Image (cartoon, rainbow, N blue to C red; front, side, top):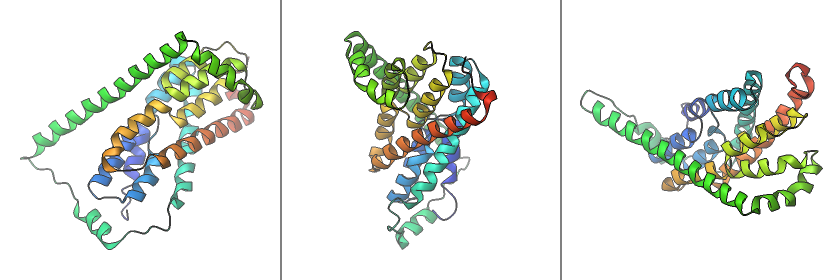
Length: 265
């Protein structure tokens, strides 16, 4: 991409939330606007949680604090920019060939009075399909988490990872929420936000990681979108793991250095 097309999935991914970034990247690959390697690079950092979810749902709805939501959103953006910078070297040796450039230039969508209805109908159908896709995965993983809870498997797994969380100074009470969030983001942050703990900042930092990572549910949503264009899911998984880690690190640094943001009792 030589004309800054990558800015579009990045901005829309931030504004609209999961899985808009991946959907746009997949369309770019489909129409030859980007190569497979460029799609992998973009996929690693353009697919993010939106401000409505982070500030509205997590900040105001769960933590009852708008400032916390804004903090999580800022560190979320900083983390995805960091990952984007690092992924500029992903398969850097693979250069564009002349055919790739010609395909990128040749695809210029044209809207006129004759095809406007068709484009609107296609857009609405795609939007509805995406909504059903997201809702379907949330319901599926909510059922899976309920089964794991009822069978006590989630509790056993939480006990198993407790030594790891304790190593990072995280209380045992957060283990179940972390595992749940790794499976499905919304359920995980919901559990973490209501854990009775005076160290509220610990829960905020964990939520920063989960928001950056996204969870298995979202990863499968992305896989269902990009598999049609034969884009590898590997860089996405690496990128989201890095993004979650950077988001948690940035949140920790800000909470430590700006006392007025710390909600600890």
